[in-house]
Length: 137
Length: 151
Image (cartoon, rainbow over all chains, first blue to last red; front, side, top):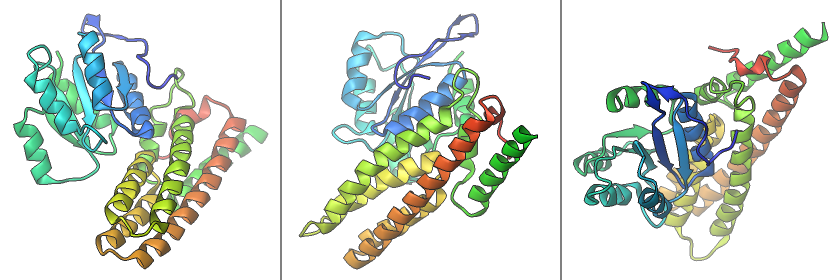
C-alpha cells in the first residue's frame, strides 16, 4: 500500500470517490489516517504541513474535505482552518481538526472559526463513518 | 498440523501483548483495516513508528542533557512521541510518556531522566515483541492475520 499518494477511488453514490486531504506532521498518524480513509473507499492525499496543504489546494480543486492535526510546527491546524475559511475559493470545503488533547477552549475556538468537527486522536474507523455520513452526500 | 500450531502461537502471543498491557484496542483497530489491498498495513505503520521514534528518542536525550533545560521543548518532543505511540496502540509507552510530561510540568529534571530510562526500556521491549509477532505472522501467511482474532 502506498502511503501518501492518492489511491484508487471506489465509486460512492454514483460519482467518483470523495477526495480527502489529510494534514499531519507525524508520518505514523498520516499512515493511520490514510489507512482508515482508504478502507472506507475515499481517495486520500496526505501531506505533512499546512503550507503543503495550501499548495495542493491551490492546484487541486476537487477536495471534498480537509482533516488536519491541530499541533503542527510552523502552521497549526487552527491557522490552516482560518486560511481556508478566509479564501473565497476554499471556504466551502469542510475542515475537521484532530488533536490528542481534549482542551475545551481549543475545541470551541476551532468550531467558532468554522471547523465542522473536532476529533480526538487516535483516529478510529468509527470516527470516519460518523463524519462522512453527516457531511458528504 | 504445523500451520494450526503456528496460528495458535500468534493468537497466544497477541493475547499476551494485550494482557501484559503492551498494546491496547487501537492495535486491533489497525488490524481490522488490513485486507487484500493492504495485507501488511499494521506492520508498515509499526515500522514507521519505530523509525520515527528512534529519531525522537535521540532528540529527547539531547534535550535532557542540554543546559539550561528547556522543559517546554522536552514536553513537546515527548508529546509527539506519545501521540504516535498512541496511534499504534503502544499502551505502556504512552503511559510512561504521560509520566514524563508530568515531570516536565513540575520542572523535575531528575524525574524526567528516570522516566526517560523507562520510556527507552518500554520502547525496546515493545520493538522486540512486535518483531517476533510479525515474524510469526509472516510464517502463518497473509490471509489469516487479515482478520482480528480478538474482538
